[in-house]
Length: 364
Image (cartoon, rainbow, N blue to C red; front, side, top):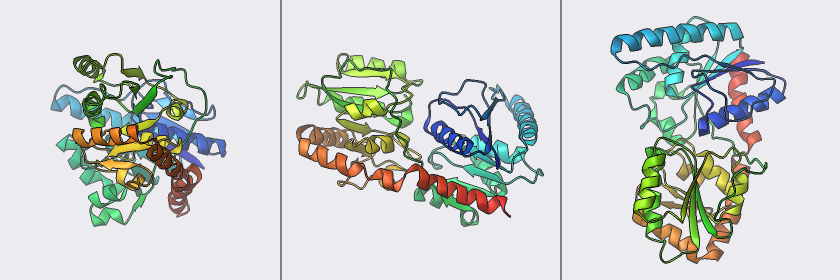
């Protein structure tokens, strides 16, 4: 089996991690795997040495409409040549802009193309142009993979007939982390994700600020990197949380840190299918999440293996955190039940679903 995987880049995001996991699994199985990326950068996650990683460097900024048309046309042509050269049995692409470009690049090549939405389709892409292009091109796909029922229901019935719902696999990596938090001897709350508006870390900081005086033994670590680092650090200073909140940056293998923590909080405004939440649960952590569009409600069984709070509610977030801070027994019970997530979203289960989609297309 020869599969070509296509994504914007292989940085430290959730979609990038899932693609890396799929690629490594199939390469270990003996499949020939090519990964094409739009940006020219080294992958953040480790790839099997047998994988052919090809950064195309076709992502360009456009200053006006004419430049955008030229750049996109050139990108489509270069991507088409790279796909043809890889000679795959099947192509899989991740994320809206990449999906649209891939579908245009593969017109007439007679290669099955599986596209996958990796975030809330109601929220991303933000551009009306890409929303229109998605509507015009997705019918060209051989199959469409989404992660949740909510994402499935976003699309029109004509597309749903070729869609499959496949969650992200829960992956726990056990290699020691290079990060040793200063708060390791204290009780700790941990959060994880890109430092961007979507992840709502500004809300989490506000909620934690209401608790800092009453619970001085607790700290907060937010793992990840992004464009809002400086803004969030300024907010930390304004809220007088300088010695209580840490921003350690990207951590390739966060499992060890999660296992050392006491509570995990996800404060996102919207999601696709949050890997960080699943990984925290698989580490046996009691979790709190906003009941944001896409993902959390299909992962957490509220009050059984985690706690859901109203989206963007600082008050409910603060109250849920405080409830777990003062109730160790509740933390322990939620953490024990959270471990069951590995049965629902284990790697083998998820891979089987992907391979069912692939086999139906390649054998046709």
